[in-house]
Image 1: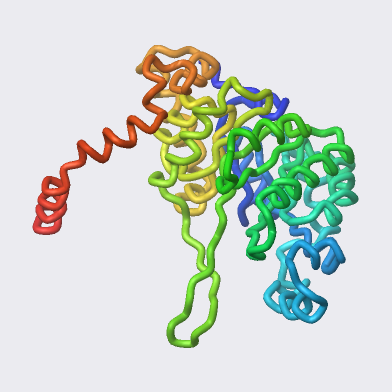
Image 2: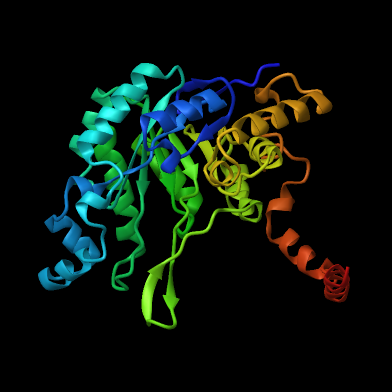
Length: 343
């Protein structure tokens, strides 16, 4: 059985990829992920703030004056609190690239294109098989237009694309007003892959101390539906590869993403929850499903459930939304919930 796939121009032995996490922040962790069966490993992200703590461009984008920006820096971790400084990151990348037989993809997390260019070149020189850009930006300045935010993303992609020759992936936000149009623009700007979607972590309030506090929770299969929809819509419409990143906990999510049109399926939460050995469970489950259904290669089933290839493309349109709401039996759902609680 042929499980191989091509993602951002890289040949992978199967579609399951370890996405950025603390597990991929050390050489030992990366080697463990490879030994456990990852087809590729995306390293823990290097933050732009580690490379360039303060720039005029960042101040402008964050919408702060000098005093306000100085205050905002107090919310960032101290430099020594980051898992890896840039030099350590590059050394880990170099050693991992030398020792791993699977692609090792470097990851940069940031906002502007100013802090990324030099480090992107260094990552390529250190042996990265590719780069993943994780543009984590929430436009909290209400006077900033949607077009300005879109240009920010496009500027970063173009700048890094011009700086390096290795494959380039962009971890995409789901909050553009037109995800499809932006996907086409990123494709044209030189992105070799789009990862759907960036999981934006939101703060919570501590009611006792009246402070804003960070909260993080592992993803669940319930979160698969938004990226599943957009991968289904984008498959065969752009040249860039499609990476799925959200809610992968079992082989069922892997299969669904591939049927939608994903070239690679990435997981972090499942590995943190179940251990790196869970990679083999995901790959074995994919293979078993294919055997039962009579598929001999991943390429045969890729995109079979995309909008362009299903018999009822209206299932992706507003009509199915209305039918879903009309057919929901609230009384039955309440009764079922109550019955479950009693038992």
